[in-house]
Amino acid sequence: MQEKSILIVEDEGVVALSMQAALKKLGYKVVGIAVTGKEAIALAMEHKPDVILMDIHIKGDIDGIQTTEKLNAITDIPVIFLTAYADDETVQRAIKTRSHSYLVKPYNPRELYSNIEFAIYKHRMKSRLGSNQENLELFLTKSACAGLIIDMQNSIVFANSAAEMLLGWTREEMQGKKFFTLVSPTASTADGPVEDTIKGVLSLEAIHYLPPRARVSTKSDRIKTVSLKTGIIREESGDNRHMLILLQ
View (cartoon, rainbow, N blue to C red):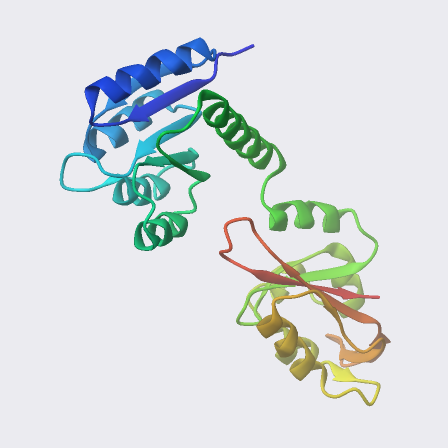
């Protein structure tokens, strides 16, 4: 089994060496010790560690949080923050970086071990499975149900072959088009306009089912009655939310 690697970012020499000894005892390989943000970025790019242990208050022009923000722009290596200070402002800044966890010194080796192992597990599972949207697109390519994915501006970003068959347009023709303009859905019940319902779903950020029956237009100007269901596609990062639309 490949040895799991850790990069330490800590500007206090005694603390860094103590941490290195503890990590080696736990079975990890320490690929380096950085004392500044610039060194941390260089070592992270050189060694590609499984986890970075990042002290927030380090030497140099940028602190550990700013260093993590720069790392996030170029890599997805999980970061665990280490600090002796847990004031609200620092915690909120750390949260915005989407780091794996935040440990307050002093911490025990078992706590450090469990956080490292969980960070590595989550990262490897994410790499193996792909994003929620990628998984959904893969599922939809094999589904007999017509499925489309739209972004938060209601533009179509994906349509499967079943949607092509139902609506008459090719995937390329639908790509980038406004869903409501192209399909012109209208509610076939008294529950209110379909578009308003979908906008409500987007604002609530929750899975919600539309009126059970709706009328949609096809490329040949035919009107078809379908069941119309939607759901928010949430990514772990919280960014790039999309909506799934199923037509049956």
